[in-house]
Picture 1: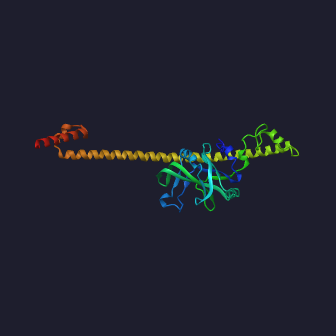
Picture 2: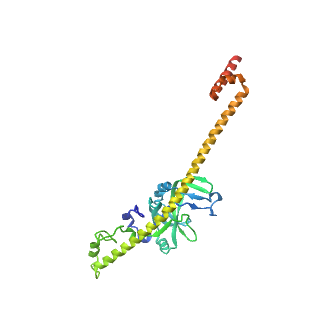
Picture 3: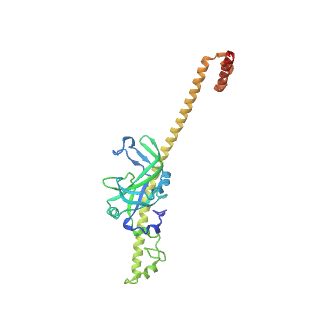
Length: 301
């Protein structure tokens, strides 16, 4: 699946391009907050976001607010959002005032940062794994602030995105039904065929460059994803080992408690009585103690 292939272009085309942003909101990359002095000391950790959790959380971003530096609202909102299973990232379209799109076009804003929450945060040393994730918004990030996820990006929308991925004679391109349609609609040009041929060539070149860049990004991300997935697996294995040790410790404590009870009973019962019980264990011993006590009460009555 290519970038943003999930998008409903028919719905998006009605939004003015000077108000539309395309975002990579969150990837599986951990975020390092150990040096973030704005956070309480116990929250300065490396946060890990499992792939399956991000996949489930992607659509929770729809219609959420778009902010600036996690401080103020831009007055914009997320139009649509989805998980890209190929690139392992949450993608979104946002509609914001034109002033913010201009900041993106001028490269003064190039990244974004999601407002991420979780039902559970599994802490291990300096690492915290987020489970039960949902997104409550996204902020454009303007210098001197930086985004936690190094792969989160913001792009101003352009017409090329809305073209089909294969452009040939007889197929749609640059807003025309096909090459003949382009020629028919440009009869006012000196050479309609040459004009349309130039448009088609430019579109194909731009498309090839975009696809090549996509392949490069995928290659880089694949290597990072393998490394990160290994780290997450290790953390999850450590958590399971911890749970197992905890369960074993609880079981041992319970067994020690039983042995303590047996020892106390043995201390007050005649040794000959204990020997007669043999290996009956705590349950038989308890029943015998109750029977003896009952007989004693009956004898006193």
